[in-house]
Length: 116
Image 1 (tube, rainbow, N blue to C red):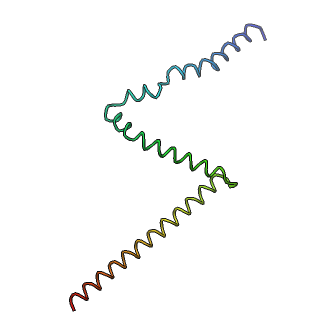
Image 2 (cartoon, one colour):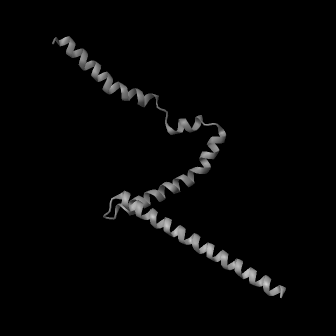
Image 3 (cartoon, rainbow, N blue to C red):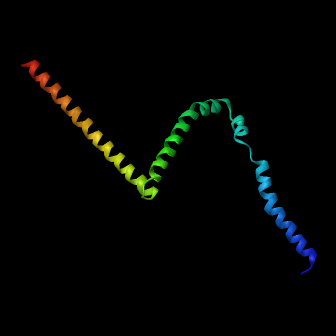
């Protein structure tokens, strides 16, 4: 091939490889610019929810760090914890149901004893 063809190919490759990411970087707005484009209602809601989202993220990261310390793969550790949480929730629901039944039975006995 001729030298001119090689120069054209190298120049077009450089334009694609360097110019493409540079263009994306240039046209992509920053987080602050996006936030300022929100309407005032969305800005207010975003500011209200920011602390809660940050706390949720921090909790997620701490869980991730805790699970990464185990010798199990992360997904298995997450599955095991979610199963334990589900079982605890079911046990709590059963205990609440039994307590409600006991309270209802106590009310029935109180009503029976008051009518006799």
